[in-house]
Amino acid sequence: MDIHLYFSLIPEALIASNLPPERFGQYYSTGNSYKSKGQSMFFEVDPNFRNEYFDIDSAFARCVPNAEGRPKHSVYISVYRVLEHLPVSALGKLYLTTAYGHAIGIERGSSIPRDPEYSLHLYQDMVPVNSLVVSNLDPGHFYESVTLHPEKFIRFPGLFFVELELGALANDPENGPVGDLPYSFIHHLREALLELKPPTGTAPSIKQTKLVHRVHSLEFPYRMVKRGFYIGNGHDMAFYPMPSHHELRDKYSKWWHSANL
Image (cartoon, rainbow, N blue to C red; front, side):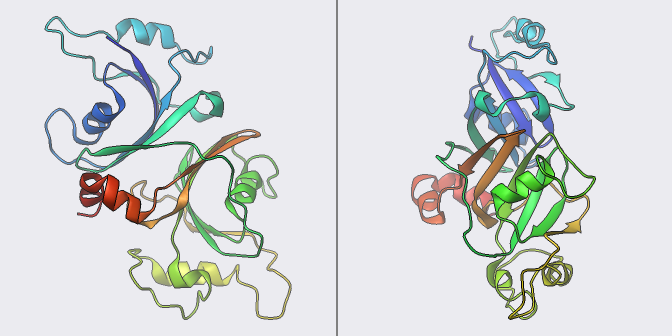
């Protein structure tokens, strides 16, 4: 039976399993019985990947079906400092699983999006920290600001994060309508954005990022993903574009429906 290697993001972990990605996503989100326990996200990792930090071979030796032939669901290899020891080149598809166990896999994009003009962003950091921040830096420059060229004492060896929608608040943090934004911290979000938004006719604000929540829930509505997901380790960074709502409704209707229950 095949052995798969997965990099879980909720929580951070490296896991071996006999289950293929879609079945692993269902198991990881719902457990053995079909009962909602929470959404999950994970990368499929090249099974030939090895790093002396991980005892992958021993885990693979334990990842075997039981006497009745049922597959081994999971063998945890590490739950600490996984990202910093995992090169981006070893990562395959990113799988997004709903709380009801439906999973879709998304491919890596060809390039990192760059914004030519000053703009406001909302980022959910997920690994190795789970904080919520706003920034006037585009995703690539935001990643560099906390990994390669930090202006503060905080620095990470790598980062996995997602950009979330701001709606009208991206252009008018003070008076923009909330619309269908599902965030319960709108007032605090407006205040944080206003610290980054320069007054009209002046040079861009010196402050580039502002913390909204120091520790934030790792779960969020998939419909609020803007552009996609970003992962980097040192100088290597990759972008996984989120399919459009139209494509999700048409091609992955069961996933889309369960993601919005």
